[in-house]
Structure formats: structure tokens, C-alpha cells
Length: 522
Ligand SMILES: *[C@@H]1O[C@H](CO)[C@@H](O)[C@H](O)[C@H]1NC(C)=O
Ligand SMILES: *[C@@H]1O[C@H](CO)[C@@H](O)[C@H](O)[C@H]1NC(C)=O
Ligand SMILES: *[C@@H]1O[C@H](CO)[C@@H](O)[C@H](O)[C@H]1NC(C)=O
Ligand SMILES: *[C@@H]1O[C@H](CO)[C@@H](O)[C@H](O)[C@H]1NC(C)=O
Ligand SMILES: *[C@@H]1O[C@H](CO)[C@@H](O)[C@H](O)[C@H]1NC(C)=O
Ligand SMILES: *[C@@H]1O[C@H](CO)[C@@H](O)[C@H](O)[C@H]1NC(C)=O
Ligand SMILES: *[C@@H]1O[C@H](CO)[C@@H](O)[C@H](O)[C@H]1NC(C)=O
Ligand SMILES: *[C@@H]1O[C@H](CO)[C@@H](O)[C@H](O)[C@H]1NC(C)=O
Ligand SMILES: *[C@@H]1O[C@H](CO)[C@@H](O)[C@H](O)[C@H]1NC(C)=O
Image (cartoon, rainbow, N blue to C red):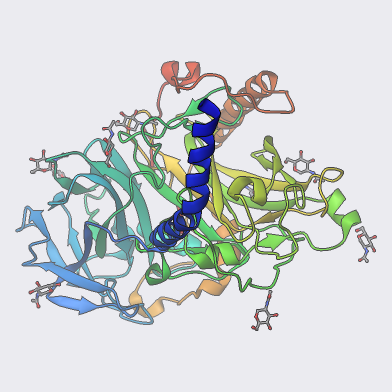
């Protein structure tokens, strides 16, 4: 009886299975196209500060002037000035042509939906009528977060060899809350410091893009034994977003959130090869939908090349300067586009971040499930003690897993690095040191520096700290390393606890107040 019933139902299924199959296929094509869809942000504000009316930037993005705009309110109105840069040279154009400036505090308030937002601040440190380029010195706060502190946009631009730049942050807006951005000139001995901003962008992002979704495991904390959750109460600052082995991707080429992806040339330490750009269509999935990164990121990569002997003796290495004293989210993007590589163990490699092994058998096929399917992995790194100041070279090393892998090789498609706010809510790092070779006084003497010397000037980026502070940081850092090394000497990272807790040194550490600002590359 029982047997017969089972038999009957099996018969039923076998008759119906072609229909099921068709149905499933139909369903999967529908969902697949959903995964391939770019993101459509709820809030998408591009405010061109110091101008009025609508305008279109060279990349086609629509900007709205802040004068008379309903997108934002500005307070107080009477102490700020809408200004046009004196020198309008080879500047990109909108939103850099005009700025909002003031020698006293001002606040922009945006009425936006609840949820996570990208907040982008656009700066063109130039001469504006009545405002000396080097006197801009200010802080930017949003709710409990200090985004910039004693910020010198001119030093940042000079150190990058750029005329203008963008800073990107991720901030959560609670239900029925407004998003405020307060610009405050920092006190200076001559009382003539001022604050300015050329453009402000606010774009919604999917909640699970960088933040830990409810119920998820969290992110492996390098050198620790637990997972770390990035929660709504934490703000992020983008440090790097690199299309490894590819070209920079403009905001309009992103998958809907206007993120800028740069090439990795100045951070890659050499030795690798750039494989042919894959023709393959990137197959986005539920785990890695298209908004995670545009196809171009996954179609380009760096690998080690065909010389096994050389590959065995070397690493694929990226070196990315960051600020000491903060936690960082490190995201690695991987997608196997080499058609010859389809099986697990075809190309396996070891991943080290900051000298620590974080994956002893990275494999694009394991990560994603197949060729041309994208995947990413997140890691959390604490760099130095909170409160220490200075620069630190964060390294990412890939080494082939010879003996376990068909190809003696390693490969990577993309890198993103974000700074997490400190326990006091700050994301601000020190300003770069004034470049010694550049002496700027008047607009007429301004020498235009192209982005071609980006690399050399970047390497020259220094930090304003006294020798004593440097030594102190080094000491603290050595202690930190020793402590960490003694903790994690194993071959494999073990994660047992599931919840992040405050580390002892974070609880008892005294914070340095001298927070100044530095560079990023977004
Ligand atoms: C600017 O564009 C918005 C729609 O994008 C429109 O509602 C508004 O009227 C425009 N303003 C002007 C001054 O053209
Ligand atoms: C965090 O914010 C997201 C929206 O951005 C919301 O869906 C989620 O419930 C929030 N989580 C908590 C714990 O407030
Ligand atoms: C933003 O500013 C408004 C008006 O000034 C204030 O009511 C609100 O509490 C502020 N929101 C936050 C998150 O600070
Ligand atoms: C700086 O400003 C304060 C008050 O805002 C004033 O008392 C002081 O005299 C000013 N100092 C200089 C050097 O202008
Ligand atoms: C991509 O396609 C072009 C032309 O269709 C071909 O010449 C090239 O070899 C292909 N590249 C790869 C990596 O398959
Ligand atoms: C491979 O690399 C090794 C070590 O760098 C070198 O000695 C050898 O000449 C290389 N072989 C080829 C074919 O380039
Ligand atoms: C690769 O990098 C790791 C981590 O920094 C290091 O321990 C290892 O010695 C490097 N290997 C080679 C061959 O350079
Ligand atoms: C980082 O590396 C660059 C060159 O690779 C070096 O010039 C610089 O001094 C390093 N910075 C630190 C803080 O070690
Ligand atoms: C970020 O700042 C907020 C507000 O000060 C704080 O509650 C939160 O714990 C901070 N996040 C981290 C990771 O320290």
C-alpha cells in the first residue's frame, strides 16, 4: 500500500517534471535578470552648492543648485556666501565651478527616507573672491559622526596631485530623521579660517551592500577569534575602490549608486599580468547581484602569469596606505573568467591581509559556484590602537597554493576598503604634510598638476605629527603587533564567538584630540 502510493506519486512527478522544469527555468530567468538589474536608489540627490537652477555635469548627471532648492535647507542663510572660483581652468565643471563658503558654521539639512546613504562631499580647493586657498580649515559633522576634522582640502589635493576630489561616506538615517551636514571653520590663530563645499551627493544604497544583515554571521576579524558585525550605528568612509587590472569606472558606469572605481596601478606592487579582458557575461546571483559591482570589475583581473617557478617564489601584492588607529572593512572581489578554469582546485591560492593569513585556500569556483559567477569576501582589520596617529601601509598578498592547485597562480578582480568610525564617532585622520616643492600664493602662479604625477606625490604623502608622537605610535604599534602575534600563530583562522566586543585597549585607551585630516581615493 505504502509502496504503491509512493510509486504513484513518483509517476505523477515524472509526468509533470517537464512542466516543473519549464516553470523553474522560467522562474530562474526572471530572477536571474533581477539579479542583473542595476540598483535604483530611493534618494538620489546631487546638490550643486553655490549655484541655482538645474544643470548637467559632463558625465550626464543632473545637479540642482542649492540656491532656492527644495532638496536641502541651509542654515543660517545670511552668513554663507555663494562663490565662483577665481580660476576656472581645466576643471571638470559641475559641481566644481561654484561653492558655498562661510567663516562661520553652517548646516545643510536633507529630508530623506530612512536607511543607509552614500554621502559624497565634492571639493575644489581654489581661490574664491575674498577667500585665500590655504585658509580653508574646517570640520564636517553629521549627527554623532565627525566626517572631517581640521580638514585642509588644499593639502589633500596637492598631495594627490589633483585639483579636486570627492570624499565618500556611508551613514544610516533612522526613521523620521533628517540628515544634517554641519560645516564648522576650525579656530586658528589668525581667526580667518573658513569652510566650503562645492557639491553634496546623497544616494541610497541597499542595506546589505556593506553592512551586516540581521541574522548574518558577521565578518571575520583578522587576528581575532570572532566575527564582527557592521551595524547601522557605524559610519564608513571609502578609502579605496579598485577595479583590479582594469580601467577606472565613472560614477555613471556604476551599477546604480554612482560609485567611482579607480584602476589599481598605483597600489599594485608589480609582478602580475593582466589577462585579456574576458568576453564572458558575468552571471550575477542572489548572493552577488549586479549592484555589488559592475560587470567590468569582474571582467578584468590580475594574475601571476605562466611561470610556475617565479610564481612559487613571489606574491601578488597591493599596498594601500591607511590611517593608523581605525578598523577597516576589506572587501575582495573574485570572478573566474578564464574559460579553462571551471573546477574546484584549478586555481587555488592563499590570501594574506596585513601579513595575516585570512584564507588558506581561496578559489573562485568555491566562492561563487562556477566560471563567470562573481563573488566577494569581507574581512575586518584593526590597524594600530585607537587613538594612534599616522600612516600605515596595509598590504594584501596572494600566494599560489602550489601542490593543491592545477595552476600555480593567484588572481583578483577588485578591492574595496572602508574605514569604520572610532568609538567616539570619528572618521577623521590627519592632513597630509604640505608638499615641500609646491609654493602657492596667487592664482596666477598656480601650476596645474595633472593626475599623471599622482603616484609620486602620493608616495610623498606625509603626516603632521611630532617626532615624539611618531615614536609613541611606533611603540604602541609594536606592542600591538606582539600581542596580536602571540594571539594568532596558527595556520588557520578560527572564529568561534559570533559577536564583536570591545577590545581591552579600546576601553582603556585615552584618545588624542589632535585629529586632523588626510587623503582618500574615491
Ligand atoms: C529642476 O529639475 C526638477 C526635476 O528634476 C524639476 O522639478 C524642477 O522644476 C527643475 N527646476 C528648474 C529651475 O528648472
Ligand atoms: C538598520 O537599517 C536598516 C535600513 O537601512 C533597517 O532595515 C534595519 O532594521 C536597521 N537595523 C537596526 C538594528 O536598526
Ligand atoms: C538635524 O537638524 C534638525 C534641525 O536643525 C534637528 O531638528 C535634527 O534633530 C537634526 N538631526 C540630527 C540627526 O542631528
Ligand atoms: C578672534 O575672534 C575672537 C572672537 O571671535 C576675538 O575676540 C579675537 O580678538 C579675534 N582675534 C584676532 C586675532 O582677530
Ligand atoms: C573576445 O572576443 C574577441 C572577438 O570576438 C576575440 O578576438 C578575443 O580573443 C576574445 N577574448 C577572449 C579572452 O576570449
Ligand atoms: C621563470 O622564472 C624563473 C625565476 O624567476 C626564471 O629563472 C626563469 O627564467 C623564468 N622562466 C621563463 C620561461 O621565463
Ligand atoms: C607573501 O606574503 C606573506 C604575507 O605578507 C609573507 O608571509 C610571505 O613571505 C610572502 N611570500 C613571498 C614568497 O613573498
Ligand atoms: C609605504 O610604502 C611606501 C613605498 O612603498 C613608502 O615610501 C612609505 O614610507 C611607506 N609608509 C609607511 C608609513 O610605512
Ligand atoms: C561609531 O560611532 C557611533 C557614534 O559615536 C558609536 O556608537 C559606534 O560604536 C561607533 N562604531 C564603532 C565601530 O566604534
